[in-house]
Length: 55
Image (cartoon, rainbow, N blue to C red; front, side, top):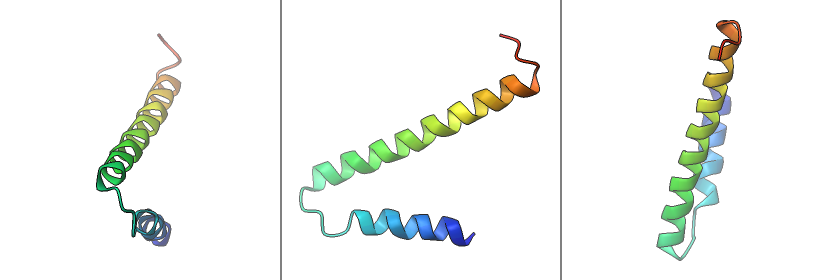
């Protein structure tokens, strides 16, 4: 749980004092999108591995 809070603190500090609000919002949306894509790839790989690599 400490690692998760550490990443949360890094995420919040990365966007502190950034002036163009539109760019900050775009970067936050992109980071969430990227995290979801990584989680989907991990899920797909593990699902294929557990089901015998059937395509």
